[in-house]
Structure formats: C-alpha cells, structure tokens
Amino acid sequence: MADIEDTHFETGDSGASETYPMQCSALRKNGFVMLKARPCKIVEMSTSKTGKHGHAKVHLVGIDIFSAKKYEDICPSTHNMDVPFVKREDYQLTDISDDGYLCLMADNGDLREDLKIPEGELGQQLRADFEAGKELLVSRNSGRITSTDVSVCTVLKSCGEECVIAIKTNTALDK
Image (cartoon, rainbow, N blue to C red; front, side, top):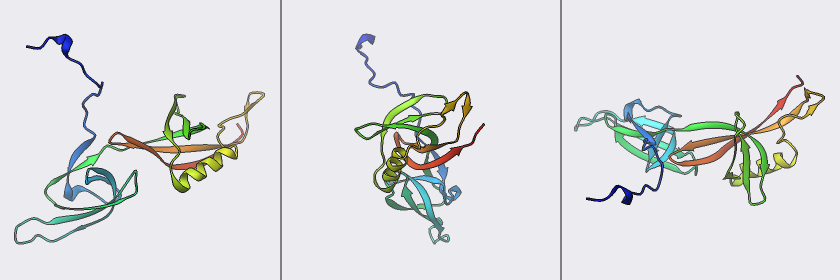
C-alpha cells in the first residue's frame, strides 16, 4: 500500500464540470452548446420530423465563441448534449504592456494582466482607443470627477479559455 507522502496532486482544481447536460430539443437559437468539443453559440437550428425509426433529429449550426469557426452537428431530439458554462465579465482597460498583454481592472479593483490583445480588427481598435487616451476612468480635480472616456473590455470565459470579445467606450459625466 502506498504511503500518503507519495501522493502528489498537480492542480488544485475543484473537479467541477465545465459543461452540463441539456436535452437537444430544449436548446434554443443564440444559446450555447458544445459542438465537436468546442463551446459554440447556436446560430441556426432546425428539427426534422420523426422518421420510421422513431426519433426526430435536430440539426445545429454553431459558431465557436473563441475562434469564430463554424461547426455543425445532428442529434436526436430526445438525447442530451453538453452545454458549456459561459461567464461574461467587463473590465476597465488600464494599460497595454510592450509584449501585447492587457492590464485590466475588475469592478472590485483587482488587476489582471494575463490576456493578450485580440487578433484582427478588435485588437487594432483596442490599441487605437488606448493610444487616444480612453483608458482613464476618472481624473480628480479638487475632489470632483470630470468627464473622461473609459474603455471597457468584455471578457468571455468558458471551458478553461478566455478572450476579449468586445470593447466599448463609455463617457463618465460630471458629478
């Protein structure tokens, strides 16, 4: 029998699942589903009539929420499919490092610096907004908050992956 000291655990994962089952007929357009082991947003869905073997089939078309690749699958309507837990959070952009990592601040003030600038048009817009000085939330002049543009990054997290999916610029008003 092995000694307790020989046991070594690599991670501190709670063992919680990253997906939950849902009957295929209960899925809806604009919802999320796992297609080909990837978290996808359902963009098209159609149901065929019951055939001679007794099962109506559901045809699903989804777009990967991280890579934007299109995936398709067909499943009997009474069978279960995995649905990913998807979390969406907004962060304020505070800085962009020289190596392309974003410095993001949560509502509670916690900073994170582990996400890279997204590829393509979104990344270019993010960098342009930052260089235009839209990263500051407030500037205080004699205790008053003055009007300032704020870049807010929306981060999507699912199945152990995270990425910035959108940015928006809010204007804080004088208070």
